[in-house]
Length: 135
Image (tube, rainbow, N blue to C red; front, side, top):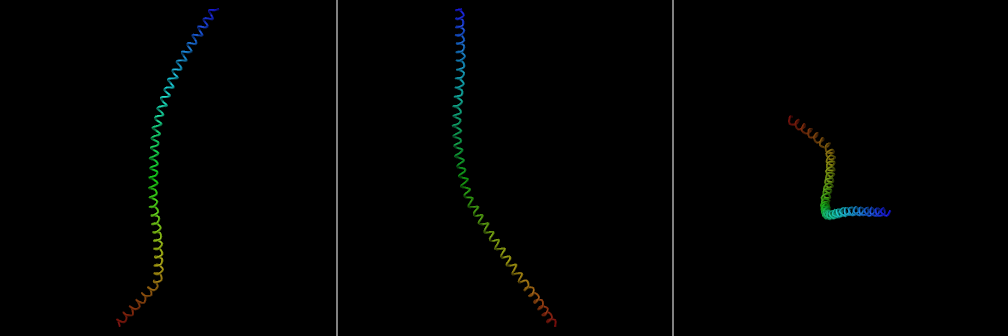
C-alpha cells in the first residue's frame, strides 16, 4: 500500500511538473503577445503624432483660407453695394425718362389740334393765293 502512495505521489509530482511546463509555455506566449501589442501601440502612437501634426497644419491652412475668404467677401460687398446704387440710379433715370415721355405725349396731343388748324389755315391761304394769281 505504501507503494501505491509513492506511485500516487510520483504521478502527482509528474502532473505538477507537466502543469508547470504548460504554464511556462503559456506565459511565454502571453509575454510575446503582450510585446507585440506593445510594439503595435508604440507604432500607433507615432502614427497618431503624425496625424495630429498634419491635422494641426490642415486646421491652420483652413483658418487662413476662411480668413482670406471673409476678406474677399467683404471686398465684394462694397462692389455689390455699388452695383445696387447704380441699379437705383438707373431706375430713377428710367422713371425720369418715362415722365418726360408722358409730358411730351401730353404736349403733342394738345398741339396736334393746333397743328391741324394751322395746316388747314395754310391750305386755305395757299388756295386763296393761287386763286388770286390765276385772276
